[in-house]
Image (cartoon, rainbow, N blue to C red; front, side, top):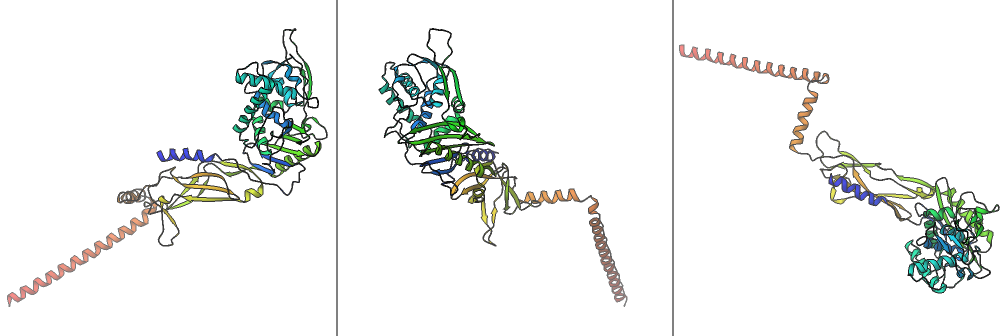
Length: 467
């Protein structure tokens, strides 16, 4: 029982697969963007990549990190008062249209970041968060942005984005402000896991007041924001499965887009960076999504409790088979193409201390008894192109005890009990009776013969005495 419990425990640990890279640049895709990546969200499998680890300028895609950090400090229902920081954004930069001393909710600050890509919003977010984090409520904007950038980098690293360096909350160009397609994809997946952000990045537009306040003396702005992501808001590039996320553009960065789409239970995240034209970032993203949806599926690789074979037993008790089945504990599926599924290699390794090699053929494994039900007999490994996808423990399906004198005696006793008085045994009984009768006849004949010899010998002796 203890071994069975341990087997279950370790099997559960091994069932959890690690994210793997399973595809590289496909010959079917020719993208304009300098850098790109396509990831399936549930498994983390990379379906396509092109220069995915090359440092690139992320432009306003940066704001997805800004929003994630903001929600760690500011509640969506909280009302924030803007200051002169909203005037710090350069005239050429995109704006949400905030005014000084305006009242706006945390939720609408998120909208202002993600829909119209407000650089004025980014300044307000950075200032408020930095002041709260530091406790210095008089901190100037320049100092606040430095501290906020540190929080952005901490957030990115916590999500596995270790090749990025953010120096501002908005993404306007700075030579030291960079990321990679892979890092931005990891951050985008965190956006989808955040209920507030996942909802906002899907919005086509927002029309309404920044806050609803009963006090009419408070300053409230009315807005009309459209999503800059044409996969959601444009007729020309509308993609019906899109669920976000964020656009970006500066002259050094080119046209950038982190996007997500969901179809038939498949959820994909793509990032394209450095496209030469606005339309090309959408063309590349749609090509990536179509490639992922058309060529990959969730495929079952292992079923829970699946019998994977039999093992031979070394001198099993009488009356039992010399083999038992072994099975796997957990189930496992992965997001793969059919071609990848066909290339999966399965390798079974049994624990060497549980068996002996048959001397007759030098190959057959004969497993030593006893064996407990659920006992760990070995491990199974699934590899794709040399990369481990998943591993699990192999468990015995049946308990088998050792063969002893007592087990032999019990076998014969039970055999007689179960078979001696059945119709099938009648011929054997008749045969046995016949044998007994035959033996009795022989014994009788032998005794008669001995008696005759004895009488004959007595007569001879009597005659000799009379003579």
